[in-house]
Length: 343
Image (cartoon, rainbow, N blue to C red; front, side, top):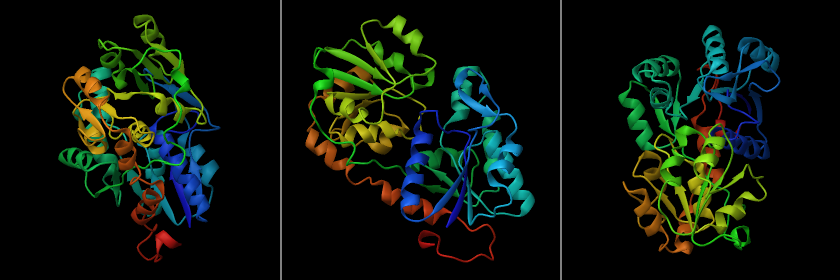
């Protein structure tokens, strides 16, 4: 099957959206499917407001034409609501094509917290953008209920997985020079990740942040006792998860959080606030601790059985997630009939 994937988020960005779709491409290609990725790569871009590492395509219609041309795919999925997503939506409606979309990020809440934009305005845009979509894929039942209250329709849960062969328990040499216990955070270093809530905690041992982003310099200056490793390659990242005593997820706005699953697969329990994303991934008191008091969650998570933590992650396979994606896609026109999952 030939799938057109349109996404404003792509390499060299490092985030859950890019990692999810990169994984999907690898699996689908292995199954014999072809995916055309329409992304900002190779086009003229400008930095997003307040997010210099997030590049937006300034000629999205031209980029869409350059990468898709006159090709008619079997299915079209629009993964993001940015300039490229908007151009693809316009093209599909003009041609009478059916399509599916994704809701990855609580941008309305983020824009209100970060830029003071009233949340109802971006929610109105989200409602308009996704209205023609045959299916809007959301990562959890909680997100489905939340966006449903804001007027989005045709919602379907499409979860996330983890590569348990790659992410698994191992030796702890990575932090051999640090006092124990080691509390670890992995991900984009940006204000919306709420890392101050983690780094300001009075905890024993050491705090480590793996990742890069626009807030890194500020946090390095403010928390000189924490270790900031910067970006780490995919080859060594599992070793960081496995060597930590507790993985800390302080975000209040993420819709899922792949990093939590990766930590669990390495046997590392998670400490997080009792918010939507952690509640969709963590079994409180078994694979992690969810508390209104993040310090309490960090300290209590240390006592959890790491073997049990990993066992729970093994049920979340990417192959199953890819199958769910194929089953969620729709043919471009109602007259087209095929079994998408096996085309």
